[in-house]
Length: 198
Image (cartoon, rainbow, N blue to C red; front, side, top):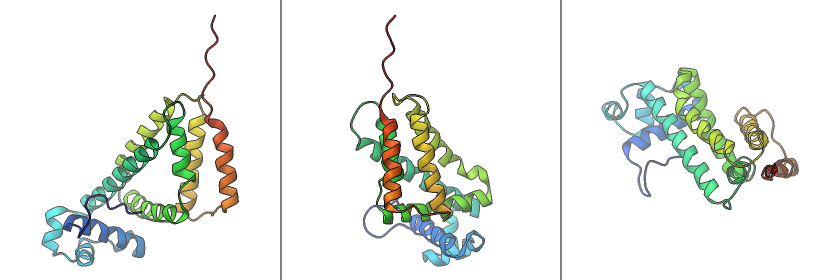
């Protein structure tokens, strides 16, 4: 699953190549190895060409996080669109997003997110604000999803916890464990009962 959403099919533009190169450097060699010179070299552009798009390392990291946040927003919205209309639609999407993806897609997503999130947090925690805004929007949508308070939030917290476990390689649940977790959380998807009439 590609997070390089800024370009169409064909050869990526210079800006996208620079972002891809910076992400690859972070993933393979760590954030300390990310310099403007290294990103330019990896992307196959001149230093001046890189500076045309990104005047500083902070600007480069800001763009990387912005791209990741936009991918998160688009990917989650597409997951919501695949759910049936009605109560618990957003929570169902969160359950699919956190537990229903193919393992190779999850590994790709987690690997790329880990690189970008950790690099930005290391440089300046405020750089994570675009991702925080996406998460806040999801939380707001879950709060208005027609479920009893706590049900959708527990599903989101479980998905977030699993994502963090993958990012930091804390543990890797097996297929049976994942399926059992997903089935347990799915029991929380029933909408709130109607208010009794006086």
